[in-house]
Image 1 (cartoon, rainbow, N blue to C red):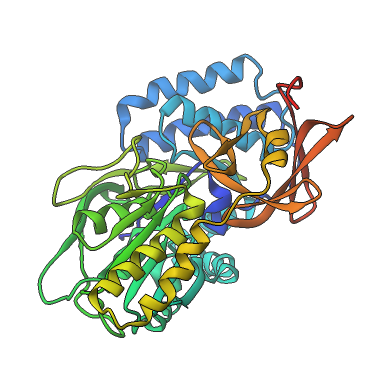
Image 2: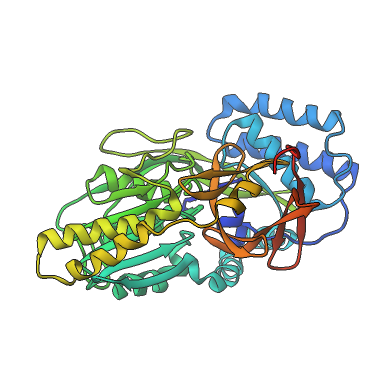
Length: 443
């Protein structure tokens, strides 16, 4: 049986599929349970991991962490899963790795060994509240279609939503796909959306890959679909927004369209995760997200693992939508000097030149905090972590900041005696985490 290939980021699950981002409260872990979870990794990796030469070094590193007592104080199963995830990524050098704690998913997976509909129903119940990844579908000024997609769901679940989104923008004169906060997902959904951008009158290969399946190694390709509901849009200008948190299937969507000359990429270099993954249970309560294959872009035989996808028009991700909108209007205005694009172009250009009036606030906030940094770049305050990912912080007043691309959490500056001493993360659900400042001598 062939399963839909999943491409997700292990380290940015909060921006990826809700099915993989659950933080479930559970009974405290035990020393034996933590040991068994680490040991349960090896047979799963040997059965599924696409790069078997790396398994022995990975297991040696994790056993070393276990022997040194690095997990001894992690009674909370979620905290243990996050620590083990970080060590697994570091040992394997693959950002797709992740350990999750989700007893409900593990139970559903095991119970559905001969009943796959149970897992699909479980996943659908989790994905439906997130609208199968489709966050915003709109017509921007000048008849430019805009689709923000934060996750590629299984098209078996999200097909109707996806085709409805494409039907909504089918009369646009240009299209913008927003992949800045897309952590990956099903490559079949990427195939479905990309197929709308080609005529369909000839075969076009989008992706070529291998993966380890239930019946051994599988090698296959995905092509532009021959039949689609609604209109195809093979001739209109297309722009794809990218950011440092664009990962895996989102990167493949961007990379492939650019290689085929069907899209201009606007934004920042992406995270650099090119491998397909799958979820496998570990013990009773944990699962591992494991890379099971390798993919290539068929025109060039290349991928972007570790290096990311390079934008055609580099710009900070928080400015990318306005930049791409202006680029689309400029092109449409050149194509039709009497069109509405000419009218709206000055408005969009004005948004790109608005002055910044938060210099003092940004100066106070900039600095190093535990595991992260705040830096001022291009007149904006940027939140950076793991030396790879970055998002803009937008001032909300009273030293409170919204985070680019998500409403799930915010940051607050904690001050004592007029000096910022910590950065506080405030989750929508009420959880708070404090990150002490590491350079307290700064303002």
